[in-house]
Image 1 (cartoon, each protein chain N blue to C red):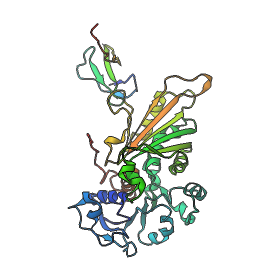
Image 2: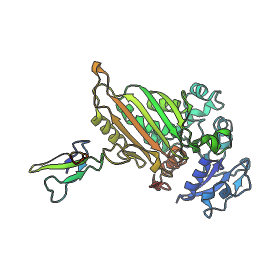
Image 3: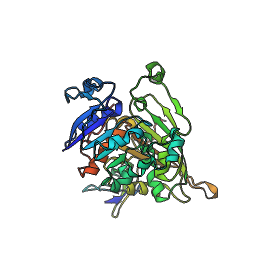
Image 4: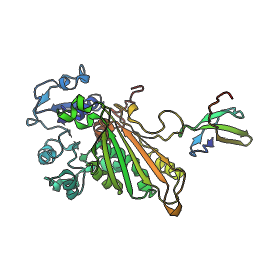
Length: 347
Length: 54
């Protein structure tokens, strides 16, 4: 049994971590922090957890040592506090963006400020099991990827690893409103958000940097907020390598994900849900990935056009669930422990 | 066991297959039609088309 603490537990990711960890057979939640809500019951901020816990939010400055820390603290702030966090627990799972990028210059370019703890960057493993499972088995500091980055990387990885895709990729990412957090702001007003299809990052979305780092491709991503609370879907457009066809693509996807517990290849010829869609993934740790290949091979030696699609719940496989999966791998527990919820249909 | 002509996944045959029987590939969900029994051959089943009654 591992005693864990969630730092920054009042937000949506913190609440999702708490939901998953309370149901985990190998975990005891020792503390959940919130500076704003210290002393208040956690089920006030997360009413879905009523009856499941009597925990109250702890003051983040008065934490005891524990076996593992889950950090749901803000980007740009976490790096300045990391040295203190590392004294509290031998294992740290950081859900902020601050330790995902290996190159501090890239961090500065995408986040607009110099990294305050660049010396710690090499100590962090990128927490995507499908690409880095072996390293995660022994890693004590794990940076959990961004939600849209996770979807895009898992969509692109099979073809990138097999050399079946040209390096220029365009990504159209759609996200639900929970991705923008639980804090108040005009962007989260119902009157402003409801019904929106808002292109909030037409160029240089931050997750672009992670996608390039992990796939080796030159990714350009636009991100749009859509009418949903949970869910991310990415549509990636690229060219296959000359001569590659749908069978080669399907074979690469099968080879990459045949043994993966949380990645399903969805590229069907029939049915309503032929390609990945986040609607049926709410609450689950699945990422569905799929593809469609243009039958026509262009003249002049260019490869066929390919569309790669991935979908996930941004708070689960795109955040808290993936962090728990990383913990399961690190502790040698069954990888599905605490993560067996299948999603909802209809939803 | 046969290979799906659409995606090459393995598809189990029924114990007693019948000519023109429709199977479904568990991988790509294509509908397959048994075209012959000895040897067993399958092809993509024809799409059901709209019939406007002419």
